[in-house]
Image (tube, rainbow, N blue to C red; front, side, top):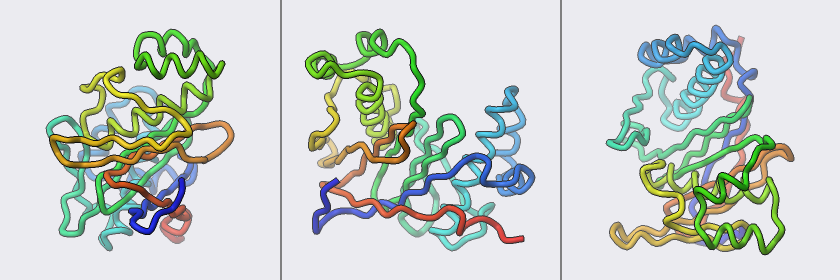
Length: 227
């Protein structure tokens, strides 16, 4: 991502579900989040939920200078989570496999992380992507990695604007390696969307309600409880 003088800063944390001890992670959650976690029947999914949401609480607590359990997170009508606080902190959480990605910014933001897993991506592309995106994949003889780059761009944007999959994936176009900006004329908001390099075995993207953004990678270990 090329840096610009008016770029909005995005703080980015990447961590593993094994970075937080399970008992410590569970205690960081609110009673409502603990109840949600206990309703998850799959042990693997339960562990990932607890780690991801406790890690998110540590990050938001650091940003707001509050104890983790005092951070109040609510949902907008379409399900987008927001922080209820005096300080403007927008965030987005994504996890895949054992990896967790959290982005925070002073403006609205969406992040998406996908661990590379081989599957029939062409069928999904044919059913869900925009014709221009499908044509780009064909013209560039692109494979799994390129599909994931498009997918993460689109999902990060949908999470950022708060619609989720209520907005059809084939209703807008985002392509890897290009300056992706979407103008929402009804809200007079411009979104900048781009893939970011994380690890070789995963693909990620960020969407920010700004003309440009710059990423500051943060150390999650510094937030872990001592002792």
